[in-house]
Amino acid sequence: MKRRRFGKTEVALPVIGQGTWNIPESKKGRSEAIAALRHGVALGMTHIDTAEMYGAGEVERIVGEAIAPLARESLFLVSKVLPSNASYEGTIAAAKRSLQRLGTSYLDGYLLHWCGEYPLEETMRAMRTLIESGSIRFAGISNCDVEELAIAERALSPYPVLCDQVLYHLYERTAEHRLFPYARTRDIPIVGYTPFGRRQISALLADRTLREIAAAHDTSVRSIVLAFLTRDPVLFAIPKASSIAHVEENALAGELVLRSDEIDAIDRAFPKGPLGDLASL
Ligand SMILES: NC(=O)c1ccc[n+]([C@@H]2O[C@H](COP(=O)([O-])OP(=O)(O)OC[C@H]3O[C@@H](n4cnc5c(N)ncnc54)[C@H](OP(=O)(O)O)[C@@H]3O)[C@@H](O)[C@H]2O)c1
Image 1 (cartoon, helix red, strand yellow):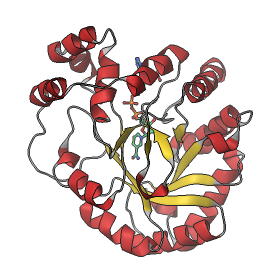
Image 2: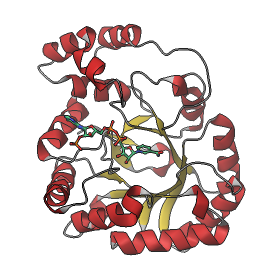
Image 3: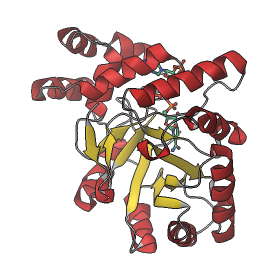
Image 4: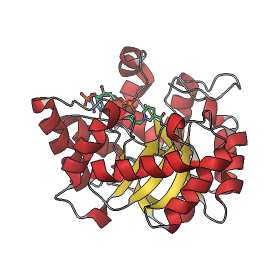
């Protein structure tokens, strides 16, 4: 699994991490998802992304169960505060609840899930307090475009913004126009979520360009997609998988290196589209 320095943190993270939204909460699916998460960590996918929103807190409990037997320092555990909780006091209280559900004393990353009713400055002030009390190592944001990212940087100073987690897949490349160049100059990692897209999955899997490149590498289309989405040093991806087979397939992407002609071919097959507002789910 390729690892890269994650922005200004000096921490080297796997290019492919693990998402947890909608992991099954019921008995069989739950135990399979726990086994899959642990297997993913064993394969090097130590960056685990969750949020208080997922399963209204239940997913954090599942992640807590998954990581309980693992060496905490081997993981990079990230959770997110809901905008409706993101007042100064609310952020601190939400972080405490997340830590309890996850069964850990600190988060490696804590992100504002998206910008809402509370000023970003207020949420980032709470993040500074959480960093200083040792509850979180780094703070970041999600679903934020350049302007909000710049506000977060100022408000979080002297601490760096950990990352901006944004929607990024082959049919949704809007972030490449403005956000990626800004993030590169500021050394702020972009963590792409929903890497396989939603409605377009059948078209993606059937795409001829992707299938040809996958065949040339003796791998799957999904691995090629993840390799493309993490082709730039600023880019990381967090696919979610609830089975060991899916986790193994996704981890393969962390070993792949696409040639520049392959990147160009994918680029042509899935054009960036026009400049527009940053998309989110
Ligand atoms: N910040 C935000 O606002 C935000 C928004 C959305 C998502 N996220 C984060 O990003 C993560 C990923 O996004 P996502 O969950 O929306 O979408 P995704 O990772 O693009 O897709 C997940 C779907 O793909 C399937 N899948 C994964 N690997 C597979 C494989 N190798 N073969 C076949 N199917 C496979 C999963 O099935 P199985 O579950 O059956 O394996 C699941 O149905 C989330 O889990 C969450 O942590 C953040």
